[in-house]
Amino acid sequence: MPSVDMTKGRIFRQLIGYAVPLVLGNLFQLAYNAVDSMIAGRFIGTDALAATGMAGPVMNILILGISGLCIGAGVIMSACFGAKDHESLKKELSTLLIAGTIFSIAVAALGIIFAYPLMRVLNVPDSVLDITVLYLRIIFIGAPFTYFYNALSQALKSVGDSKTPLKFLMASSVLNCLLDLFFIGYLGFGITCSAVTTTVAQMVSAMLCFIYIYARVPLLSLRPSELRLDKAMLGTTLSYGSVTALQQACQPVGKLLIQSSVNTLGVSVIAAYNAVTRVDDFAFTPEQSISHAMTTFIAQNRGAKNYGRMQEGFRKGLILEACYFVLIASAVLLFNRPIMSLFVSGEGADAVIQEGHLYLSTMAFFYIFPAFTNGIQGCFRGVGNMKVTLVSTFIQTSLRVVFTFLLVPHFGIHAIAYACAAGWSAMLLFEVPYYFHYRRKMALA
Image 1 (cartoon, rainbow, N blue to C red):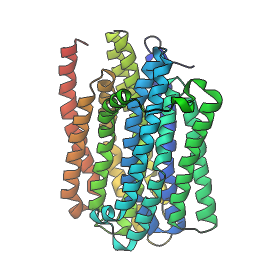
Image 2 (image 1 turned 180 degrees about the horizontal axis):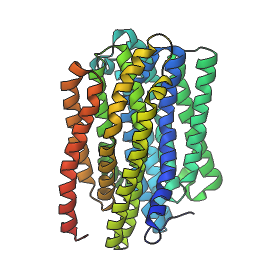
Image 3 (image 1 turned 180 degrees about the vertical axis):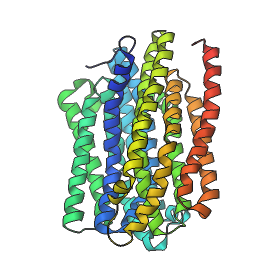
Image 4 (image 1 turned 90 degrees about the horizontal axis):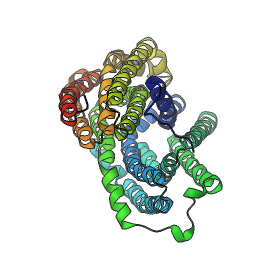
């Protein structure tokens, strides 16, 4: 099984080598929603683009909550594999799959039932309410497949195989794109088909992981007699995953509240905001992946008590974050209008593109803030201080929502960029002093 020992060797090479597969995996995950948005906007219309945008934050809460729980389980499975305790590894995987089946079915049922009242609470315009609710309900039907893919991919990563889940995610993303282009772009089906193709792609990625494990990874292949729920392991899984899941859910909950403010501004503005948030997601993903690389690097060196190397890894990780900021800010400033034109065409497109241009021309300069907040959070996760990441994320999200509600009614979605900057600034004001305090406390200097 492949492994990476980060306690020795070139730091930049290790951080970049670890981050790149994560970037690719996350970008393909984002591609699900982005492709739906582009095809919906260009082949169905502005209403369809607005519908996918209003459903997006709810979908993100679902996906990030699931991934947070699975990440917690992945830590446990990695520990079992490292200790060569294969029996406990299988117990954890079995517990994760059984509990996940119950959890994901319950989430799907609740989502289907409460999709309509939730969209009402979020001020979804009547003109697109019905198609948004239908789109969201079909997405919730796919929740069990999303869970199973995340659970099985974490199992593979726990035994050192990080490339196979990426390959399956890439295959399902390409399938999603091809199905959308054929059924929507060529045959002319509507927004319902977009949700169905996304669900089918999620099902395929889960099935590919399942088939691969039973064909190639005997260690993770569970016999019927091994399928049982271990209460002790379930408790440990929940304790590991709950903080991560809460932090993961903070951002989409904030986006959901912000979306409710944007939804009062009309369909064209909603469509523009949907498009720019897709751009933001792609911009933030490499920053987050560098942060995850820093987490693993710092955690490994903390275990080896290489405290000086930890500090060097943290410093070089922040340098990578800063270099990436220069790259992404330049790209967004130069190409924001062509990027926006990918999402819309036809009547009303000019208004949507102009709204997006104003937002992205400002936000490009502010990408420096999440570059550093992500880097610092990667450090805290690496030393095992998960609570500070939750608190700082909560501070950032809360202020962003407050400033959005204060500014957007007067200045439109352009003001959301400034609201984000205010939240990130407050996050840094909390994290940076705490970092130096924590470093002195733990004698890491």
